[in-house]
Amino acid sequence: MSEPLYVPVLSVRQYARMAYEHVWPDIQAAMAPLWNLPPCPGLPPAALKTARWQKELNRVRGAHRRHPGWLDAPFAEEAQIPALAEILSECTGLSRLLRPVTGPKRIEAQQSAALETARRYGCGVGIRVCVPGEWDSDTTEEVGQLLGQAEPDLPVDLLLDLGSVLPSRPDAGKEALRALDALRPLASWRTTAVLGGGFPQVTDDMLELGELHEEPRADWHMWHEVRASGRAYLSRLTYGDYSVQPVTALTQEQGGGAPPWGLLRYTTDDWFVLCKVLTGGPDRTAGIRAAAGRFRDLPEFRGATASAGETWLRDCADGPLTSSKGTGQVPHWLQAGNIQHMTYVVRCLDQH
Image 1 (spheres, rainbow, N blue to C red):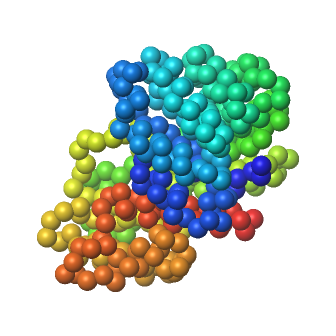
Image 2 (cartoon, helix red, strand yellow):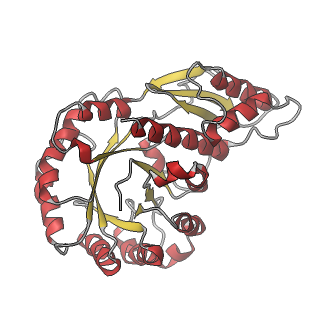
C-alpha cells in the first residue's frame, strides 16, 4: 500500500463526504482522509445505532471501496466507547480500508478496542498524537506504552495532530519537529502524517459582507518549515490539514442555529480567500453571484476546469440574477471549497 500524499481531516458529514467523492479519481487516489464522528454529548450508548450521523457514516464507508482512510471518534464519552468501538469495528471489517484510530490520551478501553480491531482485520491502526501547544516530552513514553500493547507486526500510522496552526502560533513548526524527533524512532511507522488546521474561526464582525478577505495559510507555511529542516525522515512525511474549516468545526454538533451568513472560500499558495455572503433575503442571489465573480476574477483563479469547485464558482458567477438556481446554500459552499482545496493541495504536493 503506497503512502498517501495528503491526509485531509474531515467530519462525517454530507458536504465532506460528497467533496471526497467528487474530486477527480487521481486526486482521490492520492488522499487518505481522517474521518471524525461528531460529538454526541449525553447520548445513551444504545441510541448511537440510530444517531443522526449513522446514515452518513454508511455513505462514507461506501465511498472507500478502493482507497484507505482512518475513522476516529475523538469526542467519545467513556460510557459510549464500547458501543462506538462496535460501530467502528463494523466499518473496518467490511472492506478493511477504514482503519481504527486511538491515541496516548485515550482511556484504556478505547485503546484496547482499536488495537483489537486492527489485529482482527489486519488493517493496522492510526495513533493520533495531539500537540495543541508545546511538545510534552512525557508523551513519548505514553506512545511507547501504547505501542507496547500492539502485536509486533501490526502496521501503525503516526497521525501527529497539531490542531490549530494560525499566525498566532509561530513556533508550530519547531514543536512538530520536536515531536517527530521523539516519536519517529519508536516504531516502523507505515505512514507519518503531520496535520494542522490553518483556516480561521470567522465571527460575525470579522469580515465585510461581499468583500474578499485574505488569511495566511499558516499550516502550509509550517509544513514548508518542517520540510526545510534537513531531517533524514523528511521523505517519509505526509502532509495533512483540516481543509477549509477551522479545527473547531469538528466539535460542532449537528443541527442548532446558524448565522444569517455563510462563506465562499478559495485557496491560493499563500492565502485562504474568504467572502461573507447572506443565506437569505432579497439581495441574496445578487450577492452570491457577485462574490463568486470576484473569486473567478482573481489572478490566482486556476480556471473552471481545475476542479468541480472552480466549475461551481464559474457557473454561479455567470448565472442569472433572476434565479437563485445554482447559488447553493452553506453545505454546497463547503463542498465546493473542500473540492478546490483538496485538489489544489494534492497538485502542489505532487510537484515536489
